[in-house]
Length: 313
Image (cartoon, rainbow, N blue to C red):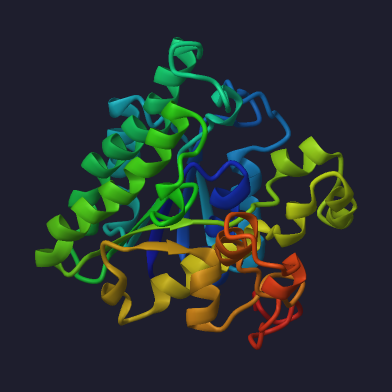
């Protein structure tokens, strides 16, 4: 992807950071945005994860990382961001819309009449409005050249999300990106553009590791507390998924579709950092929801792609 330009909106941590790093590893110039910087902390409240750090990781991977503090709920900030990309690069080849930050607002197993209404509506703002605002300003730059890619990041495939996610506002918020990708696929078709929705599986994000009191090196210690965590994947898996998809000259075959990191790992023959290929949604469909007698390890097998030493090279 040398010579290509990407914008990863919401690249402070987790999947967004990993996708930015892998696009950089492929040689791209990557603009990384978010609200947490070394000077300011967003409402998420995780000051040790900043967009400057993400940009440095992109540089270290071999790309060019450019951190731009941006609140994607503020149209003028997004307009200024895109104008800067246009001024400095004159093109945009990949838009990854990974803005979120609403995990702290989720109220599982709470009826809509009992939930915190302000928190639920804020979730819509963070997970829906930000995506539409970003697309509104960024897509005119992306469609200047055919072959552009838009990735709408969400939680759960369209098929998996047919099962209620036990929180109305969360359920709605995480289904909307599938429809955004579907609609954008139709709007981008005449310009040679591709739009997909993409989800990780059970993600070992920084916040999830903290929740279980483990690190990326000791994550398996959390399985005793949560057995399903055995199917968890590192953020690198979805990063490698975006990297492979962006480099595929035939990616338009996926336009409008809901994809997962595990699905693309099989499609493009890559693995997670431990050399396995976790199939989170297969495991949940067959074992957790379907009652099949199988272990999570049965759904981590079959990785024939590059091992940890070369998968990100």
